[in-house]
Length: 497
Image (cartoon, rainbow, N blue to C red):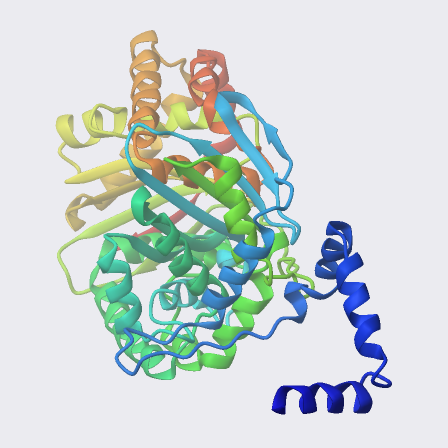
């Protein structure tokens, strides 16, 4: 009798009258599969869902909003059509998610590991004197807790699945990297997504890192080789962000707070400013589908372009900067403005640098072994989105400083004016090609190249032709590039003595 009374009351009060019961039952009898699907599609929309989780007191950590939303997206998206992919060389597949994120995947089932490298344009190019060092600071904070996990809990969760999740930063980019066992990839992807979508930038953790950075700044003052490089970069790039140090300065470090870090992250960590490289034991389509579900709520929120900057130019006359320290050492960085990453002469500069540098290079053999002018000497190059640098570094005794400078000038003059020998050329090429092959043995190295090369506009398969580009470099190419880069009438020289 209670059930009948409730039924009569319902139909009379809410459904329009007692007679509506038979109308309702008739509609139930006539409902078709198509009707059910139509109604489900109209009302069971993930964007309209409310999700509640009730957890035990001893739960290991609070379930985060991202965990619940990702589960909802996986369920509702399980029947959706796969994302379109372009298959490139070497079975590399490139996808574009609905939010604009580019994902480049190379399946490799040789070992049960997966490497993720998510890169954003930024780095030093996104910094100013006021916030110098913010990129590397932000990147290190990514593994120091999220809105749902403390720093200790995040570290424990990562350790429990034998994984690694951390940030990285450079001169032109920054990002988030993860390395996981295949069997724990789903848990790893949840941690990776949590760090990406919900970095905490906790005030206590910021202060801990600030203390560590101040200690690193003090140690840097005693590392004279590093100081020499800093002097060189500041002299070569007086108005360009490449002059900045990744650690920042004592002044800029003091100004970094949670608001500044969050603003930097919100500005540049946007899907349309990013590329994710993935290499390892995955099914590409299935992985990208799961990733898309987890990142469905991650949208670009405005312009993420790099700040305007003046392009660097080579000095028209010699420039020398000197720093005196109370140590019986001399450090020299002697160099020039060089090439950007898309410059077609970059392979020739790679070979030229190897001919000069290394333990079998000209600088080591002539200036260290034969003349005993140095205990360390090499050549290096740094390319970037904007023109990079090429230089010789030398460390030795202060009493031999003048002879060391003369020796550097002599070797640079020789490589500009004299053709490189066939044996030197072959040895340098072999070393570069072999070194790249070794670096590609790790999934992380491959994933980073997929990500950065696509981010910088070179294309994700660019690294596949590295050996071919190096092998094509001839003697004339080296001499031509030497004359282009090594402007002996206007070097930039940094000296610590």
